Length: 535
Image 1 (cartoon, one colour):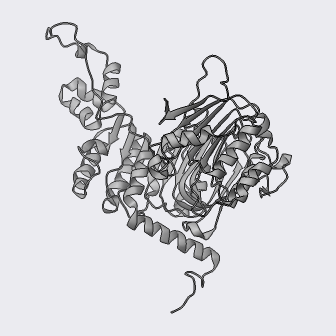
Image 2 (cartoon, helix red, strand yellow):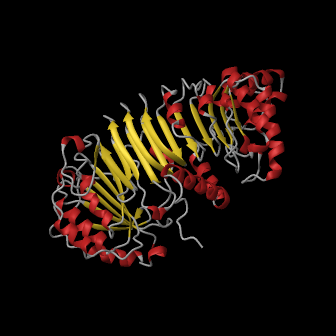
Image 3 (cartoon, one colour):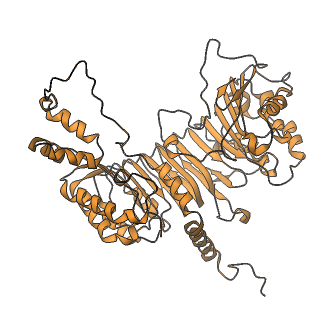
C-alpha cells in the first residue's frame, strides 16, 4: 500500500482547495446541526416577537366604548407593525379601515413565527413556504424586515427567486436568509444583489453566484452584512463590499481563501469560527474594530498553516483581537512581526487601545507575546485567554517571564487587565507575576478560572493558589477580582452582536469595572468571586 500523503501529487494551490472542500463536506455530514445552531444564534432577531403581549391597563369596569377606533391611523399602524405578520394580517378582517392599515404598514415577515416548535421539521416546509409566498405577494410593501430561516430551499428554488423579485420590487430594509439544513450548493439568485433598499443583510448556507453575476451587484444603502458558511470564490466578498459604499459592519463565518478589506465607511469587521489563509486590511479609514475568533489557516489543526493578518491603512483602529501566536502571523506596514524583532515606528499600531490575545503559556508560542505587546504601545485594556496546552509545559517558559524585558504598554499604559480560562499552572502564574510586577498604572485586574468541572480544581483551591502569589514586588495598588466559570472548556463562542455594539467601548471585557469612591483598591485586596458576582 502506498505511504504517500494525501494530495501529495497535487500542486499546493489545488491541494489547499481540495482540503477546504473536504472540510466543507465534513461540516455538512457531521456537524451541520451545531453549525446551524451557531448561525441562528448570530443572526439578528426579528424586530417583533410572538412572546410579546399587548396589555391595556383598565382603571375601572368596562363601559363597552370602542376607544381603539378613535386612535389615529398613525398610532394604529405603529401597533400593527409590532405584531407577528400572521397576527398583523388578521387585523384586516376587523373592519375596512383595518384592512387599509395593514396594507399601509411596513410589514415584518418571520417564517419562524409560523411554527409552534423549533427546530422545524421537513413536514413544515410546504405550509411555511406557501404562507411566506402569500404574504409577500398580497402585501404591497415596503417590508421592514424579512427573516427566513426555516426552510430547506434546495426544493423551493423557484419560490426563492420569486420572493427576491417581489422584495426588490416592493422594497425591504432588513433581510435574513438562511438555507436549512444543506446542501450549500444551492445558488443565491443574483436578484438578491440588486435589492437597493437593503440596510441589513444576513445570508447563511448558500453558494454565491459566479463572478459575472456579481458585476451588477449594488447595495447603496447597506450598512450591515453577515455571511455565514457560504461557498464563495476568492474575491467574491471583496466585490460585494466594494459595491456597498456605506457599509459599516461586516461579519463573516466560514471557509475562504483570503479577504482583502477595503471600505471607506467600514467601522467593524468580525471573522469567527473560520478558516482563512490571508486577511489584509488594505484601506479602511474608519475601521475601529477588527475581531477574530477561532480563526485558523487550515481545517487541519496539525498542519501548522497560519492565518496571515496584514494591517495596512487603518488610522482609527482601536480594538483588536483575538491574536493567537502560533496560529496567526501578524504583519504591520509590510513588516512581519517575529520573535525578537526590535520595535520601530513602522511596526507599531499606536491607535489600538483595547487588545486581546489567546495564548498557551506552556508552549513556545507564548514567547511571541512580548513582541506582540510591543507593537501596541498605547494599549490601555489587555484581555488574555489562556489556552489549554496539550503538550507537557516547557519549564523554560517560567524562566522566560522572569527574564523578559520592559514593555512600554505594560509599564505605562495598561489600566485594566483580565485573564480567562485560568488553570493555576506555573507558567500562567509566571506571566501574572511578571505583569503585576511591571504594571505601574494598573487599576483593575480580573482572573477568571476555567470551569472547575473541567480542571478538577475547586474554586477554593484556585483562590488558595492565587493567594500564595508574592505581591510584595507588585508595581501598583489595584483591585483584583477572582471569579469562576460554568462555561464550556475554552470559553463560550463569540457573538457578533457583542462586537458590533458601538455603545460598548470594550467588548472583550468579561465583566465591567465600576468605580466606587477611590479609583484604586489596595493590591492585597484579592476578592473571591463566583460566576460574575463577588462573594
